[in-house]
Image (cartoon, rainbow, N blue to C red; front, side):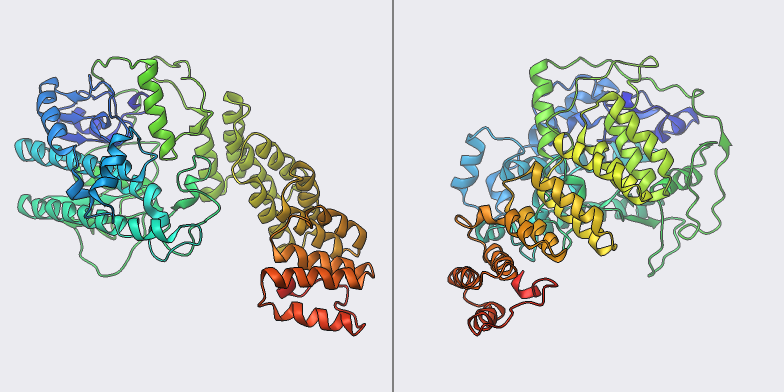
Length: 540
C-alpha cells in the first residue's frame, strides 16, 4: 500500500510547493493522499481489486460517485471487444465468465486488463480536462500484466506453447499495445495543445523473442521476474524537448530530478540520478533540500479489508507473479504509519545492489535482512548463492543453492543443470560435479540430472559410476539420449552386445541419428566406438 513508502512522493513535494497535481492509478498508492488537486488510488483498477471495498480510493471524496460510474461503464469488457484480441468464440468467452475464474484464466485476465486500461485512461483524461493540474501522473498497469499473461504466445511460437493456444492468443499483445499507443497519441495531442511536456517511462522491459525461457513461467511468482528485461522505456515529447532520432540512455533514478527540474520543484539532498539534459538542453538542476521528514504525507481514511477480501487480493497478486504462495502475514507497523521494508523489499534491494551497482557487501546485508524476516524465503537464499558464486566462494554458494531448492525455489532440476554447465564453462569441474552429485541424491527421480552426472563421471574415467548413475532409467525411458549414454557406458565397460542393443532401442524411438548408426557399425566390426574422452555431441 501507499504506507509502504518511507518518503514523500513528488506529488507531495509539488503540493507543498504550491503546485496543483493529479494522480491516477499509481502503483501501491492506496489509500488516496490529500494533495492540491485530485488523487485516485490504484484500488480503482479492475485488474487486482475486483470486489474489494473502494473506500478511501479518491481525494477529494466527492470524486467517488463519478469514478464508480466510469468503473461500471468502462470496466466491463464485452465478448465482441475481446474477440478483437483473441481467436475465441462467444461460447468460449461466456464459459470463461460463467466459470468464476479470475486472473488464472487468460480470457478473464484479458478482460480485466483491457477494462483497467479504459477505466484509468477515462478517469485521468476527464479529471485532467476539468482541472488542468501543473503535474499529472497516470499509471497503466496493463502494460506489465499483459506481458506476464500473454508474452509466451507472442510469435515466434515457443516449443512449450501448443499450436492451439498460439493460434488463439498470438495477437493479444500487439492489439493491446496498439490500444496503448492510441492512448499515448491522445496525451501527445493534449501536450501540444497545452504547451506541456509529456514523459513516458517504465521501470523495466519485457522479453518477447528468443530469450523467453520455457522452463521458467511468466506467471510463477518465483520465476516471473526472469521475463523482465532490465532496459525499460523513457520517452519525452512536447514543450522544452529536444527532438532527436537517436536513442539516448537514462536511469529510473533520473526521473525525479528531471521532472522536478521541469516543474521547478526541489529534490531531497539524498536523491540519486541526474537531470536528463540530453533530452532537455539547458535545464537547470533542481534545488536540493532536506525534504524527508519536513513534508507531510496525509492519507484519507480507508476501511480495512476482511480476511476473505484479503485472500482474494492475494490470489490476484499470485496469479500475476507478484506474490509467492508462502508470503507471511502482514508485518507489524514500525515507525508510526509505515510498516517498514518487507522481506520482498529487502530481497529486491539486494538484487539491485548485486546486479546494477555491483555492491556485493550491501547486497549480502539486504538478503540477510530478508531472511531475518522470513527464514524459509527461497528467493534471497538463491540470491545469496549467486552472490557467493560471483565472489568465488563455491562452498557457500552450493550450500545456499541447495537450501533455496529445499525451501521451494522453482525448477530445481533445471537450475542444477544450468549451474553445473556454468561451472564447466568456467573451467571448474569440481563444483560442476558436486552440483550433480548432490543434485542426484536430492532428486533421484530426475533422468536428466542422472544423465548429466553419468557423463561427468564418464569424462573422469569412472565407467562403473557412470553406468550406475543412469542404469535405473533404462527400462522405462523414452529418451534416446538416455539410451545413447547408457550404450556409451556399456562400451566403456567392454559390453559391446549390450551397447548395440541400447543403440538399436534408441533408433527405434528416433530413427534419424547418423552418429548412432555409425557407432553400431563400429561395434559390430569390433572397433572402438569412442576414444574414452566422452561421447560425440550427436550421441549426447
